[in-house]
Amino acid sequence: MKILIRTGLGLLILAGILFLVYVILPKGPRELMEFDDPHQVSRKLVKADQYMASTGTPWATEAALDIMRRGGNAFDAAMAALLALNVTYPEAASFPSIAPTLIYDAEKKAVLSYCGVGTAPGKATIDFFKSKGHETVPKMDILAQLLPSSPDVIIEILDRYGTMSFGEIAASAITLAEEGFPTHSMMLNHLDLNLVERIGFAVMMPYNVEVYMKGEWWRPLHHKDRFQQPDLANTLREMAAAEKKALLKGGTRSDGLHAVRDYFYKGPVSEKIVRLHQEEDGLFTRKDLADYKGFWEKPLTGSYEDYVFYTNGTWTQGAVLPMALQILEGMDLRSMSHNSPEYVHTLLQAIELTMADREAWFGDPNFVNVPVEGLLSKQFAAERREAMTPEMVFGKMPEPGNPLELQRKVLPLKSYKTPVVVASNQGTAAFGIFQDIDTSYLAVTDSKGNSVSLTPSDFPQSPMVPGTGLCLGIRMTQFRLDPDHPAALAPGKRPRVTPNAVMVTRDNELFMTFGTPEGDQQPQALLQVFLNMVVFGMDIQQAIEAPRFRSRNFPDSFSPHNYRPGVVQLEKSLNDLVGTDLEKMGYTVEVVEDFHHTMGAAGAIIRNKDTGKLIGGADPRQENWAAGE
Image (cartoon, rainbow, N blue to C red; front, side):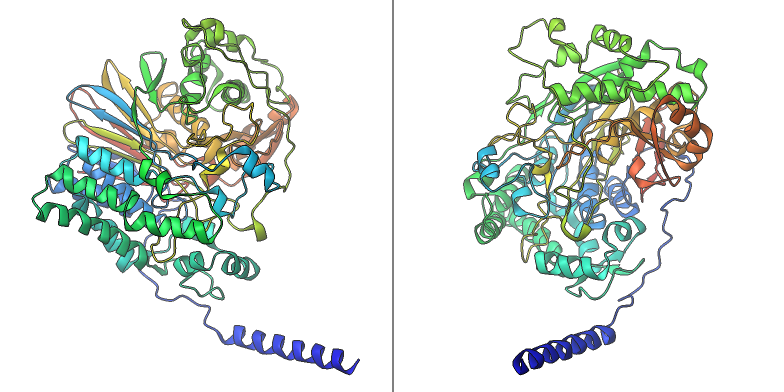
């Protein structure tokens, strides 16, 4: 008994000492910086004569403009903006994760898609995950890491279309990582963890805490505090040094670029990544990294009136937007009045029908025979339009359509029936860490009309690579562990990711480059922005700032793939107008504040084909910023 009492007293004393230590540890800001934060602040329409960028942070926009001031083209500038976004929005769009990309080649008047999404490692099988007791791919785990793709994207774009070196386009990102920038509102929103969450994060992923909190788990982040990433700066500098070494040996510009790629996928960086996986019982091998390569593809297309939409293949959800627009094309939207109950309900039904088709058919086309010709046909859109119920909600996700009969080539396919999974807490991250984290976006257009649309993403919900500042993210969580699902996990396969890029042409000329972050909301937000502009005559900034809605009536793309039948989310000002009417129709309405980041954060650049002048918009729902000269 005395031993127990003494032990108890000892533990109490130790707890008291630890509490006192915690009390006296510094918890305030480290070093505040001047910053006029644009989060949730209405923007002005931006106009420019020569070139423009609209990206997820002001620093990324400035990095793109700086490149074009120095003679670089849109492709150089977009890669500089990508790296600057990786640095200044690191918890949402980290280096070196995914980067789905579209490019517009003004000389050829051609849109091309580049697959900027990595593949599952060779050891990643459904049986492996099931043997570990997983029903879905776990978050906060090294097993959630997909092979990194953005270094491949950067080198491919620069080599094929750019004019500058990797060192030149990485310079802004290196400076930002080394010298720091002010912690902005969206970073604070994502990373403002309570004490218990910070302790849990430090125990689970100590290097991540070193990167994001300088190892000081006891000190929360503060708005406008200087945020630095010296390890990431060193990694980017070492990659640039590999390029310089190749050039000093007499190599060409292309040789230098490929030396950067090899340094990452076959050299010192890959060694560090594989060492982490060996230590943490992960799945990556040197062969996985050395063999990785993205690919060029013909974009998927659909149209609305005289606008043609381009997006990435069915390794993304990009085709949802043109499919939904083609359903709506046969309806008199103008007569409904903007954001009336009838209008909101009509768009929600088009979205939900298309999302049902996404669940049934979309997957990596290298592994799944996706009937894209049928899915994107006007006849299929007409058939889906007939399935709409004007007076009532679907109640649950509708049945998918059958596009097989509209394929000129018969494919050996069957539709996937999505099981109903009611929303739950199963599989959510420990301690509630990072439950509402997001993606980013960038659009760049140069004076010749070349343009890039790119949606980078990934999150520090898995162990970062020690000493490098590299975050490999959790995109494996967008696979399914159901072998019958088109997005089922398989070695070498790409998940059907939510991020996708979009471009729009009119009269065979580039009309608009645009996109948005925010998971399953991406096509929903872009649908609303485009129709606000084209149907209701808003300028692009007005179209972006108009209040939004969001359906949740389909399985979430991220594990554990929760499904919330009949739920629609409305920004407050929209709820005040139509919330009661939608509830009477049978919707379950949830309200979020106006300019809420979960409603998407669109960026856009419009090019006047006659004058070449540019008009840009940026969403106040996040830190997005548009500027040009």
